[in-house]
Length: 188
Image 1 (tube, rainbow, N blue to C red):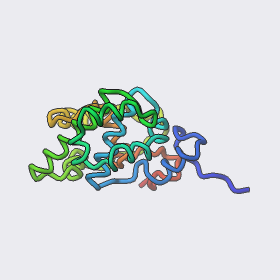
Image 2 (image 1 turned 60 degrees about the horizontal axis):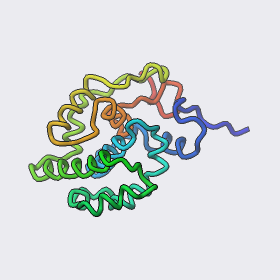
Image 3 (image 1 turned 180 degrees about the horizontal axis):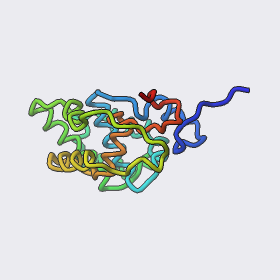
């Protein structure tokens, strides 16, 4: 009998969630554009489950121009109105506006000569320990608090500390795969 590998409890049995867990979640991402997309999607997830956003992610990529910050930063009222009618995304005016603000802030950083990936990764000093179970995983940390404050100071929206911690988990800035998960690094 072919048993599936032991995974973190949060991903359950949904094949899309399992694939995300197995191939993306906790994998260090150092691509500035991919990090921009992930930060926006984590903000869209606020108040919802991640699987909701994961199921809509490809559509988000289509209607938000592949998460091209230059294109998103230039969205006008007509584009926003069209997005708010699209059932393939979370139709929340504040969240759509946050994508635009985030794109503008991302471009401002680029124009200042800052690489978004390098800037984000500078918040992480050392790899953290790995949780024994999901109950050991925090909702936020001092690092996510600092990241949230810094992003907000730069004009980013929907980047509270809890969202930043979820972003850190997804982007591999922390590795919160539980010790019994096949994706957890070997313990030393």
